[in-house]
Length: 220
Image 1 (spheres, rainbow, N blue to C red):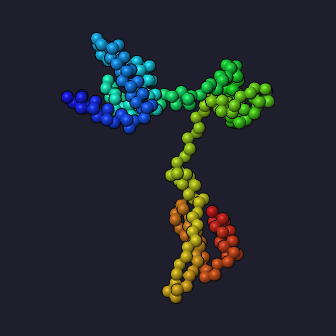
Image 2: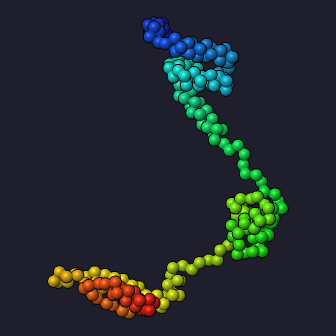
Image 3: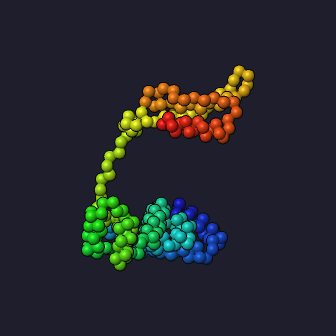
């Protein structure tokens, strides 16, 4: 009874559908019958050709989801997404990689980097170009002998070693009780944090700035 009712509704709605849409839905129904006949004695087996057929019709006529019975609509949508992903992965693949460097050239790069430890990739690359080798600088850097950089001292070690020779300079602005402004320049040694020099003025000039900068250089 329910099937008959659905058939009547489909018949009433068919005049309002386009001819191409009706043909696509009929093609989907016929193909589903073919799949069911092929899998009559076992589980429904859908081949890649069947998936491609359903996906193509779905791309052109999304309304075919209403007549799918052997597969769920979300399964068809998932097939479409997977196919879209694989297509663009194939589309964006690199046609060919960077050509391999010959063994003799790799050995020459390593030898030059070992015998000239102060040479970097740009220098070795330039020397190879002079010798007639067409190679990229990135390839030279790839095949050079990797050296461990010497460990650098931390900030605390740096301060402990150089604090007696370092001074901090600071210029500050101080308002007075009479609403005037005083400009002060202070120099302080870092080793004992003692005040090395201070100067205050109400009218800073270029000569004053140059004088206290020179004082700061002499203190440090």
